Image (cartoon, rainbow, N blue to C red; front, side, top):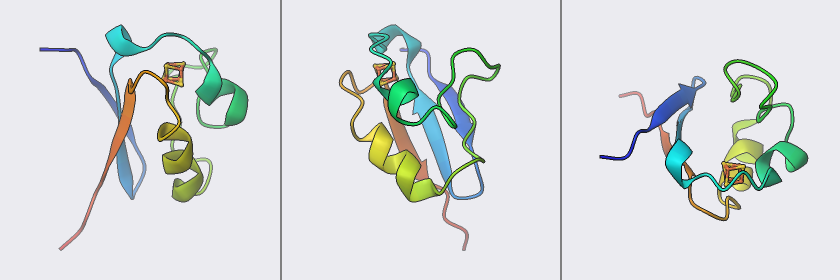
Length: 73
Ligand code: SF4
């Protein structure tokens, strides 16, 4: 089983698989408010609009990043 780390805000859960991450820094360069490897945790999903986050996650070249919507019933 591949290790998956989870981060979230009120709308989504971001899943990150470190072993798949090729450290391209695409996410960090394009959206440093959310993806900042100098911070701990390195993903802070509470700072910008969720759509901007999901758009950036969709551009992750290795698919190390993914997300699920947290629906409330
Ligand atoms: S874009 Fe994906 S592969 Fe590149 S550093 Fe971010 S998480 Fe890792």
